[in-house]
Length: 154
Image (tube, rainbow, N blue to C red; front, side, top):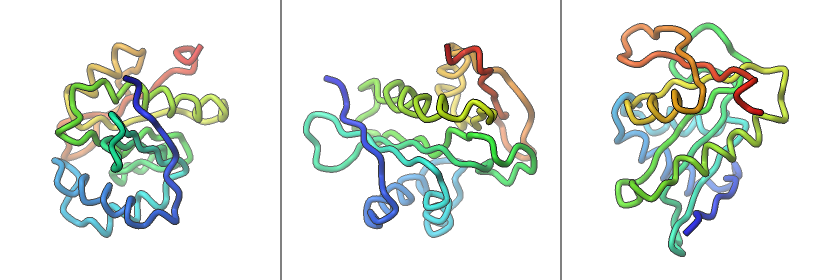
């Protein structure tokens, strides 16, 4: 079954708070849900996914115009960010439909570079299979920044 994916509006405070709380519990995101919520509100695209008629979303992803880890370069680019799949929904192939929806947004901004900072080996492998290339290190992080060349969008 295909997940239902929709945009999350800034007015959906409870949903955004739930998303921030999920990220707070994940490795590398820090422990300040208010800070994460502020990040989510500053994104230009917020997505959530539902499966099997669930009333609550089980996966989330965003696009933000600045690097999520205070990386000083490439502000204004399109950063694929805030990916989270709830443990009960892992293995249901939610990453690809969320990613495809992010790419739909990216295609409307051909003048901007595309980056991501994957914080798991699974997302790194997912990205490399789709043409992402290693771009740079991030201090004090075990994962680097990856860039998607525009020719991979064709």
